[in-house]
Structure formats: C-alpha cells, structure tokens
Amino acid sequence: MRFFFLLATVWMTATSGSFAADTHYHLVENWGQSKWGPVTGVDVDAQDNVYVFQRSESKPIEVFDRDGKLLRSWGDGMFKTPHFLRVDPAGHVWVTDRGHQQVFEFDAAGKPLMTLGKKDVTGDNTSQDAFNGTADVAVARGGEIFLADGEGPNTRIVKFSPEGKFVSWWGGKGTEPGHFNVPHSIAIGDDGRIYVADRSNNRIQVFDTSGKFLEQWTNFGTPWGLFVKGGLIYCVDGTDNNVLLIASTKDGRILDRIEGLHNPTAVAVDSTGAIYVGEVNGMSVKKFVK
Image (cartoon, rainbow, N blue to C red; front, side, top):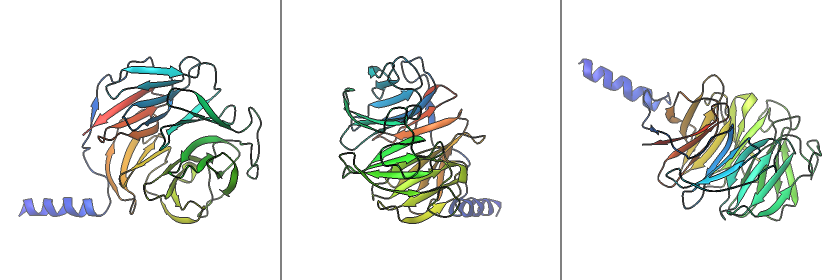
C-alpha cells in the first residue's frame, strides 16, 4: 500500500509541472581545450561544432569540435563587451557587443558579412539604426533578424529584413504583456514563435514574428539565456538559483533541470541532445550529456 501511495505521489508531482527531483544529465569533465574568460555566448552549428563567445581581448570567438578540440578562433581586439552568440540556419555566426552597441555577422570561418548599429552611438526605443542595450540576436529560417535591445536603457525587440533593413520594433518599459524590463535573450522555435527572456520581469514571453503577444510563463525564475530545439525550451537562470531548466514549448511545463551552475548566461544543444552552458562568472563552458 505504501508503494502505491508513493507511486501516486510521484505521478501527481510530475503531471503538475513541478521540478524533477533528479536530473537525467551528467557533466562531461574537462571539456574544451581553452583557458576560459567570462563566457557570455555559446551555440552549435549543423556539424555540432561549438562556438563560444567570451570577454577576452585575445580569441574572443573560439570554435571547438564536439569533443572539445579547438578548431579556430577570431575577433582579437574587435569587441568591447561581448554578449550573446548565435549560429543561424545558414551557418553564419552572429554576435552582440553591448559595449560598442553593435551586432556582427560572420561566416563560419570568421569573415565579416554584416554589421548592425553604429559603433559607440546610442539610440532610444524608436531608433532604426542605433541601439542602447544590444543583448541577444536571433535569425529566422527566412532570414529575418530579431534583436533583443534591452540590457540598458532600451526595452524592445527590433526586427530587420534579411538584408539588415529596419522593419519594426515592439515592447517598451513595463510589466504588461508585450512590454519588457531587460529583454535579455531571444530564441526562435521550429514553429517560428519567438521566445524572449524578460529577465527583470521574471518571465518568458512568446510572440509571433510580427510582435503579437501570444502567452507568457512565470515559472522559470529569472531567465538569463534561452535556446529552443525539438519542442523543448532550455532556460538558464544565472541569479541565486544558478540552474538550467528544460521545459515543453507547448505549455512551459518544466520537465528537467540541472543545478549547481555558476552564473550561467547562455545555453545551446547539439544534434545528439548534448547541452553546452556558458558561465560568465564561472568562466567556463560546461557540457552535459544524458
């Protein structure tokens, strides 16, 4: 009888959306042949190569194979305050520089392709070609570019054409749905929905590509960085919780978690399901596998 009571309790806990008691992942020890600086961005390409963005004058962008072998690097002296890094569906690498208020696009070898924003020029929420809080960037399959311009005075998402032309913006400071207080990270799901880590409002907001508000989730603590893949959303909370949460994109129900991190800022997942977490104060990239 006691067995069935415990079984029922576990089932009720799981179906109510509470956190799992034990993670299904374990740490891969000593991954990555690098002397890390503060890591603020991480992503993977179609070949499962891992791109890392770190606050360092030397080799701020490093590329590794899945086993952690360094393949190449670039960007020496180019950035003031490195922030997020994304690899788009075409395999191009995008980074945000919160210091110079710019967004850069490179090919996979590090050749510059496009720059958004004017170096050291700031704008407000209505500006079309100047930013003030360049936090994160995401690129849709059609090539549209979405910038989270929100770690600073600005509090908006900015949409650009694939050619980098301003299209629109949405947001503004506030707590109402569709408004932001530090939109810190942005990710696009397989279904085209846009997920925004509204950090200081302690929620994730979901939009369509025109900026129409769809829903919000408030069960992710203080969301710092987002990644969406295969119907799952991965969210790192780099405050006192220092945790990675894994949830369904259907309803935001949390399915798993990884604890014991050190100020995690960015997260990415490769084709095998391996998870990479960039830690800004921990100054490392941690790899987790099932």
